[in-house]
Length: 209
Ligand code: ADP
Ligand code: C5P
Ligand code: MG
Image (tube, rainbow, N blue to C red; front, side):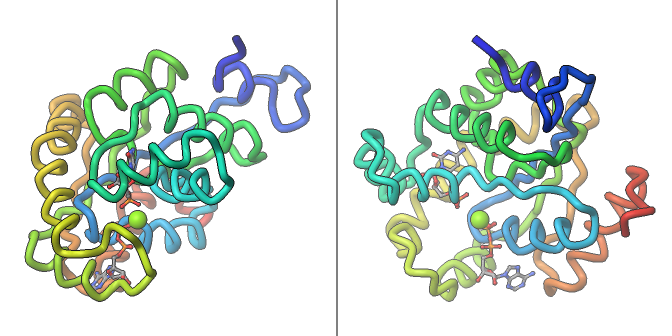
C-alpha cells in the first residue's frame, strides 16, 4: 500500500520528485487555544492546518459508516481508534499540495503516536505544547459557542481526565527527545502568538513571517 511518505515524495504533480513533508504536532488540553493559534501560524508561516477533531467531525457529517462510532466517542470525550484518524490525516496530507503541516490535536495517546509513526514514517519537526490551567480551559470551552456536543461540563471533565492520563504522556515522550516547545497559553491571544511566532522564527521560517 502506498504510504503518505510515498505520496508526498511524488510531489503534488505525482512526478516522483523528492519532496519531504514537514510536520509540527500541536498539542495541549481542550480549550488551550490550539485551533486559534494554528490559524495565526497558517497566516504568517504558510503551513496547512489539519485538526484531527475537525476531520473526525467532518467524517460524521459526511454520513460515513464510522460516523456513529465517532459521534459516540466524541460525546464521551474518548479517543477514536488510530486507524480511523490516521486514514483521515493521510488523505488530507495527500490531497494537499503544501509540504508543511500543523497537525492539531494528534497524537492524543500512545496508540495514536506509535501507529502514525509506523504507518507514515513521519517524525514531527517539533511539538508545540500549549500549557494552560484547567480552570482557564474550562471557562474558554463553556464560552466557545460553536454548538459542539462535547462543550458541556460533564464531557469537559471527561476530556480533562483523558488529557491528563493519555495525552500528557505523549508530550512527555517528545519532551524526553528534546522536541517540545512549551508555550504559556494562559495569556491573551496576541501574547500567546508572540511566543508562537518566536518558535517558528527560530525554526528558520523567518522569511515567511
Ligand atoms: P482548542 O483548539 O485548543 O480546543 P480553541 O482555539 O478552539 O482551543 O479555543 C477555545 C476557545 O477559547 C475559543 O472560543 C477561543 O476563541 C478562545 N481562546 C483561544 N485562545 C484564547 C486566549 N489566549 N485567551 C482567551 N480565549 C482564548
Ligand atoms: O481536538 P478536539 O477538541 O477538536 O477533539 C474533539 C474530540 O475528537 C476529542 O475529545 C476526541 O473525542 C476526538 N479526537 C480523537 N482523536 C484525536 C483527536 C480528537 O478521538 N486524535
Ligand atoms: Mg481545536
